[in-house]
Amino acid sequence: MIREWFTYLTTPCPQPYRRMGFLRECVGIESRYRRNRAAWAPHLDRSRNLILAAAERCENRDTVLIFGAGLLYDIPLSGLLARFDRIVLADLLFMGPARRAAGSNPRLELATLDVTNSLQALADGRTDLSVPTAYLDDPAISLVVSANVLSQLSIVPNEFLEERYGQAEEASEGLGRDLVRAHLDYLSSFACPAVLITDETRIVRDRTGAETGTVSAVHDVPLPEGGDSWNWEICPLGEIDREHSVTHRVRGYSDFPGNR
Image (cartoon, rainbow, N blue to C red; front, side):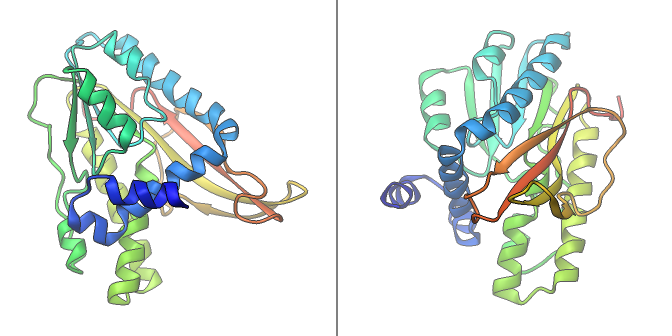
């Protein structure tokens, strides 16, 4: 607990994002990773390998743009540095490992970025979304990666809006769908190859392994056909309670269908 509190106090984070709860969420993910490192390892390996497979196929080797890179667990940083001239790590905030990596390598750039282009409005209680356009006009971008961020886009904003502004569950679902669709459209708008790795379904099991419930992780927005699929044992027995575990069904595209 002391470690988490110290991290919360010392991690740079723009005040609106801190107030909404993004830093608290990141600290919680970091703690969950430490508790479940072995259970998470296969998922993280699959994510890193999929990104490297996409990188190998790139004809241009200028810049990789990575959304959701604040924790770095699923990013094959050394492999990408061996293949590309520059890596842009884009996220709302960056935990210690990402800040230290960027501080020791001039080819790593940290870009504090709201990938939805809408969080300021949401922080003010307005749910009219803006279209994200960052980096679309940058000809140096050779590969764009959305790493385990799609299903996370609505979690903190919806919790914030429900608590602060009394947003109803139906409205939260609608906002979630809009954020997911906007991000998929954004990825499809890049002229270069794109990688998408995302939770697709959350599955709850009892201690016998029997499924007791499933829910879409992307608000029932359909994902394109194809890609790879695997399980992520995100909450083994004992993480939430002694009776239930949570598995995420993950889908990964090394070449996300776009408008190229």
